[in-house]
Length: 392
Ligand SMILES: *Cc1c(COP(=O)(O)O)cnc(C)c1O
Image (cartoon, rainbow, N blue to C red):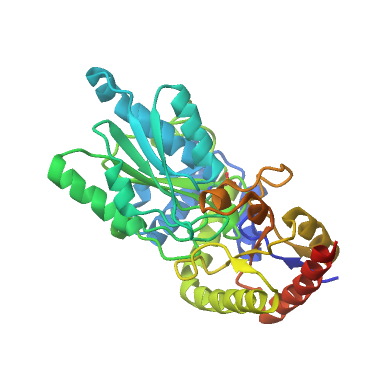
């Protein structure tokens, strides 16, 4: 029976090409990259080739890419590392230290901020507008003399809103030139990498997080981009891997699979974006025009090409998910991490939705091979189910 996997923001299937790139390192090429004999050196070159491939997709230097265990680790490292980096100067001045972020970040950011708050750091969680946009002027207006980090996601995982990273990066650069205050700029690009064009120089970011399993790579691998002039302390302490900043025997198969997935996603970005946008807009159009009361969540224009998030007032997202499951349609209500709990999505709440409307929202995230016909089946099914739920 055909499946309609509409939850690509939660994770994506591993591509055949990525699996092929991994196979040698899961089998014969098992060497430890820290050894000097041939099998070890072949593992080492696989890692370094992967680093070069990935660096080139975001306009970075290979030495600025650090492999991690995924998006959550990269986010933790960026925030905790930035604090440790700033701590000596803060201590000297007797200041607590201050981070600027926003209310719709992934929990990997929000809960790391909570952890840092327990260490005495103060955090500003910026509001977003009704479409999930962070205002660059609000970022700048929140700067204090002990602000050491701004962390704003490139694109939101629930509603797909693409944030004005370039504008914030430019404003922070200008602030540095005018005042001499260097504030590190981090972006969680987990949903954006491989889906929209990213160039670290153009965006003026110092730190960027990414994860392979959101772009048809394997789970459990990601990278943190660290601009070369930043001496961010290491995060996992131990051996000398990743230039002494991230210890642990490298996950060579995962790294090789990640690089292959990134190469494919970034190499076909232009064409995929056009196709996905067309399919996305077809689905949005059908849902909004054919289901009475349906409203789009997130920004209509500044939006990831794969994201559809719609509120069907008077329904319940969890119930919809269960009924969709019976029709082989797999979607999400709120974020995957939040489902199972009854709390309405923090993202939708921050955008000003009522609790009921937040609970009545559904996220459908397509892939490059979702067809118009697939979305027609989804739209037809939802039309029927929403009407049925409203009658109960
Ligand atoms: C999925 C996701 C993460 C977490 O990445 P993992 O590799 O699953 O740890 C972080 N941030 C965003 C925006 C995500 O979508």
